[in-house]
Amino acid sequence: MNHSFECPQCGNPRGMLDDCRQCGSEQLPIAHSDTVVLNLKFDSPSAEEALDRLTTALRRAFELGIKAIILIHGYGASGEGGKIKWAVHDALENNYFSDRVDEYYFGEKTPFGSDAYHALLRRRAGLKAHLKYFKDGNAGMTILLLGSQSRNT
Ligand SMILES: [Zn+2]
Image (cartoon, rainbow, N blue to C red):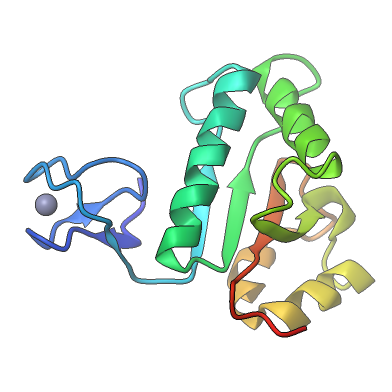
């Protein structure tokens, strides 16, 4: 999927969540970036499964010092993509993840050049490469900025 993580034991690329497929290591992977892309819909999970995965991913991301997650939840006029999106929106708006998520930016409310877009880049300039796809907004994605224990503001 993505090669942002490396196994500390065998050095092979790894996912953020799984044990190493090469050597079976259960140690935390080494993160190469503080921004990760998390695709919640890639194997069409139910909305509940998708939220469980997000919960697990947030815990792991926090342990690894990840600062931002580009969340791909999809949107569909019909079908599972839409269900996952609304489950994620609901959970965020009800502060379900507020112990780990500092701020969230729904893609459709963060079009290129908007106030939200500039506010987000002021927080995390490194997101610019990901946001170039937003143009008029992207209803299939949400950006999560994670809190950190050393935050002073
Ligand atoms: Zn390994």
